[in-house]
Image (cartoon, rainbow, N blue to C red; front, side):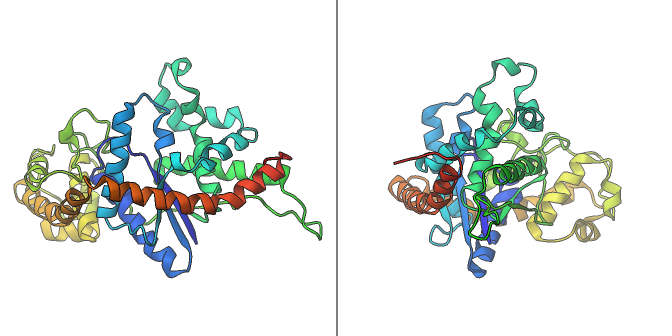
Amino acid sequence: MIVVSGIQPTGKPHLGNYLGAIRNYVKLQDEAVAQGGRCLIFLADLHAISMPHDPAQLNASTLEMVATLVACGLDPARTVLFNQAQVPAHAELQWLLMGTARMGWLSRMTQWKDKAGKNREGQSVALFGYPVLQAADVLLYQATHVPVGDDQKQHLELARDIAQKFNNDFAPKSANGEEAPVFTLPEPYIPEEAARIMSLRDGTRKMSKSEPSDMSRVNLTDSADDMASKVKKAKTDPEPLPSEAAGLADRAEARNLVGIYAALSGQAVDAVLREHGGKGFGHFKPALADLLVATLGPIRDRFVELKDDHEALHAILANGAAEARALSRPTLDAAYSALGLVRG
């Protein structure tokens, strides 16, 4: 089991990142190690430059994200934790795969359409081609499992398409005439309990780092008072909570808050509603705030301890990058060779 996943080091990590991705990183770390496998988690700083950015802020955010991941439970002794920019093989393999990827495949990517909007001609080539870098990110390490949310399934399917076409076109033959695939086709890992956390101001929109209002999200760096205040002011409706999940169907904000409580407590939504159904948000919000503070408070405290120890954070990245470079070399060499390229 080889697990590979990345997270962009832009903006402040929030509750949605924790429940939707980071918490599962920790579980996958434990699962991969238990199976004698490997878990690689990288900070996608090369992806970050596909959009306008502040270089100084990107550097600072990268270190903050390392501190956040470690505070959440990632162990650099058991997980290869690194940033892309220190492992040139990511960019090298992306270019090697550019000859296999097809314009039509990339132009159909939903996130490209969403991020580019109507001004597609004004977007960077990196934004258009970044799904190929995503493919390189996972194929480089022969990933068997890639944690993905619903919004990333299409990107993993593209990675599999690129890998399959490359293998079909260029895979060398073994001594007995059988093809020896260059790349493993990765499988999606979608935990059943993965939570899709929505904005506290609009239950139809995903919680996001880029949302202008800080009140729309709970940041992992928020104080206990800030967390409680944001939950208290979260948008709701005047009706009491229903006694079963079906009653939340047309109540986006109520469904979001109940979903957050369920994800934090490890309960099913119906179990939460059995306890709180029939009661108003004046009762439910304080209970949610207490649970939120109890869960995220220790993470925040650990983050505060780590965030200013730049020497330690740089050391974590350097050690992880050294290991990642060694792990990436065989696949990169095989890709160059399959393409007929001679390198020194």
